[in-house]
Length: 315
Image (cartoon, rainbow, N blue to C red; front, side, top):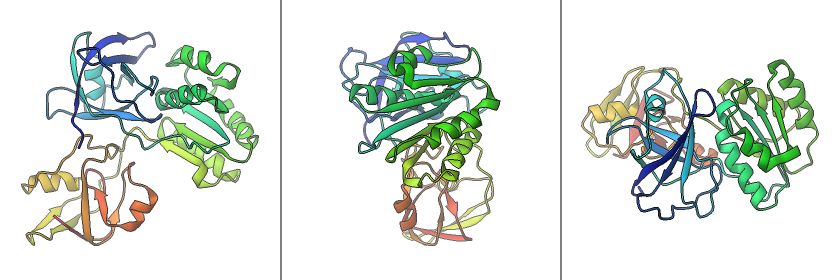
């Protein structure tokens, strides 16, 4: 695992109600690692060992001097959002180096970017890259009136290639028209609430878009069902660790005394990957590729489970 970055809050912006943008820099003002558009960092929301959440980077990915994230205020959940909204200039923040499960396809003929609400954050990163490299791009942004994060950035970058939609009843018809009027070779990228992304991807598939040209970025998987109970067998010791319904495999392994590297505990960072020796994993993460999932020789234990009642781990 790459060493965490110890950064300082250089500025906060609360212009959009309920959304806080935070600009993070090195204490010495030095350059930060560049990243692939659509990348996120995992932020430790408090002292070491606290909740860790993944947040998309919204700035320029080439030779950045700052990392910028925008976080929607949520009073529910694990507290990461509330912690970010309490940050002030000068606070220290630990983040992972950037990583991406939502990169642009460089060979795409055109990029259609569709954002819903705070899902605009990785879409903005894609747009910056498309403009920098002169790629053909179009943006659809659905948001509530008066609650559009980064709207000025989108307008400056996209110009006439941006369409904003504030009328939910008009979204479906406009989306259908734009999805039906794209050249062959266009790739679709979408991020937003789960129901919004379902609407976008189902419409695309109904119109004949192949899955390899549809790309989605999720916020996390906190709302997964509790799953069925199963047993995890540890090959190195022969021990059997029960994993009850509602308990993650990661929690069960830690409860049995195993130290498993982990960060986000939401299936988005990839740190808690463990090798599978036998059995069929029930993959529920947002990191592994389809090929990696089909190989069935690894899983992310913070969210994934066993498809049957027994799973053997090479631990």
